[in-house]
Amino acid sequence: MRVIDVVEETHDARSILVEPHPDHADAFDYTAGQFLTVRIPDSGRGSARCYSLSSSPHVDATMKFTVKRVVGGHGSNWLCEQVGIGDELEVLPPAGTFKVRELSQSVVMIAGGSGITPVIAIAKSILFGGDGNVLLIYANRDEGSVIFAEELRALSEQFATRLTVVHVLESVQGYLTAPALSALVRPFAERAVYVCGPVPLMALTKDVCSALGIESSRVMAERFVSLSTDPFKQAQEIPKDVQDSDPALGTECTVNVAIDGDRRTISWPRNKRLLDALLDADVDAPFSCREGACSACVCRLTDGEVRLARNEVLESADLQDGYILACQAEPVTGTISIEY
Image 1 (tube, one colour):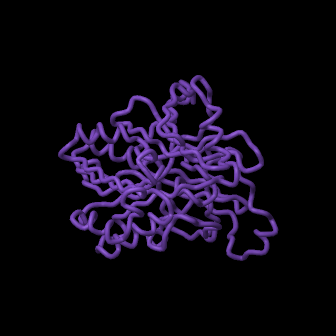
Image 2 (cartoon, rainbow, N blue to C red):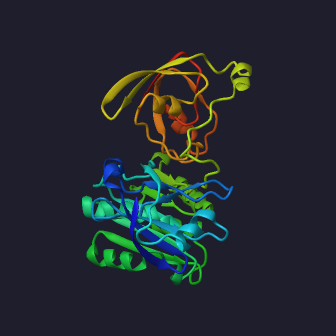
Image 3 (cartoon, one colour):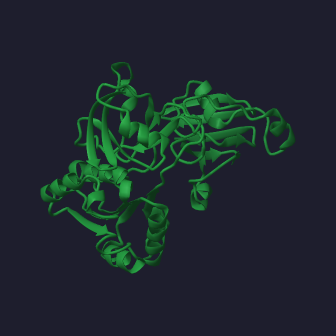
């Protein structure tokens, strides 16, 4: 992708506007709330980072992702200091499951710091593409740390009857507390809740929603991940000694896969994980981190059994519903069926 503009949002955050190379344009359709995985020059600390898109396909003509500088951060500092207009970036197609389910639904959105990035994208899609109402609760250290301050102000004026923005500044009100958040959310407890931000804010939101009787299925959370491997490289095979020593790993498996309205049957060798078997068979399966940490590769197991080598995003209810991570799935039974 080519960088066509850069916007300095705050003293430590910038948005990078990009457009895909014409030959790859078809791969970059996206849904608000998704992210890009960007290749970063390698320094021995991994060579890819994930950044949420802050643009919405319902209103923004140009794809935009936003980066907040992290002290000592390899990727964020390179993107904030070295990348400029005209530069080219190598990225994976948009991925991620943190996205609005219905444009007509009314929602509560809770963001902290740079967690506003996917949240504002979803809010814009609801406001411009649907008819739902949005309550946005946005926590920051101080006024100078508010990313998209002007854009949020303009949206509040344009959608005065449908968008309410509540800023919570540590320098003014202190940290957001459970009683304060509960008081803000309680009148809208029938709505779906979207949250993205630091771990304490995510945990606080989960506890408050549970106390208010909001089912976990109506609480969508996005977790930022820092990759330790390179998802641009083909994943390594499962070591043979692991295959031989682990009776849970089955023999070669047959996979029935439903994706984008098509159905195919492929072979899955026991020395590979499911994602790599799909990619080897030219199935256009989504993925990003390859580490079981981002949910971009999630699919639903409808028949058979697999095991996950690693899982940092799916909760027990997700697993019970059959959801698995293709990048971490290893075969147990000889036949499985999955759907995207």
